[in-house]
Length: 108
Image (cartoon, rainbow, N blue to C red; front, side, top):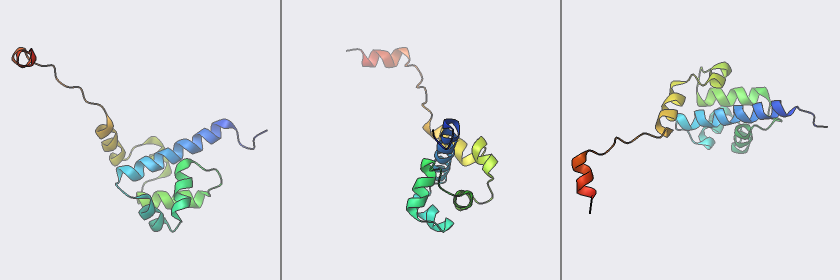
């Protein structure tokens, strides 16, 4: 029987993914964020993977290194403007339909 319920493991993975997205949205390399947090890059990688053996202090230091002043609640709610900008960049954009003249140019 696992020590941690599956739902908690999934939450840890989701939090790690959110930290990774926030780091990418802030355009930081993992090694730089880790150095700012005073942790090894391998520890940062484990945090971003949602490793359950990472301490709360390590996670909070890593968050502070990525986004000073951003709370854990704000991270989980994805309130940060840089995350919203990243989502907008990643969103597929619809292309306007071609006009009649443009369609005729393509007709061969």
